[in-house]
Image (cartoon, rainbow, N blue to C red; front, side, top):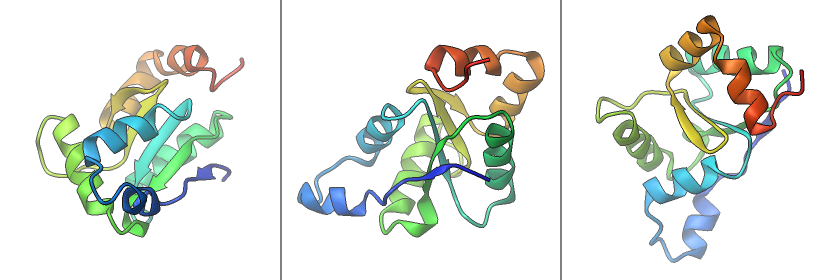
Length: 126
């Protein structure tokens, strides 16, 4: 499975003097690549969504939150973006826009709207 493992944002957070808002950081990271997945390395749903994109020929940028010293803060920020429920991963952004958690990604895949989103973001050239 090929995807870009992203660097930890902990170093960037420290370089900013620890002042970076986790929500701002999530939005900034989400805008840096065509497809961004916030994941936990031991989560089976995260693995499944990474496999889905790789199987489609997309190379997502993946942030493994459990491998980041500030990952829990980012998980809470992602939960707020998803409506305030408990932290849920994976969370997928395409073209800098929030798609959602696994349920939204799979619904988009099944109803045929995922491929156009990927094409529009420049992640897929079919």
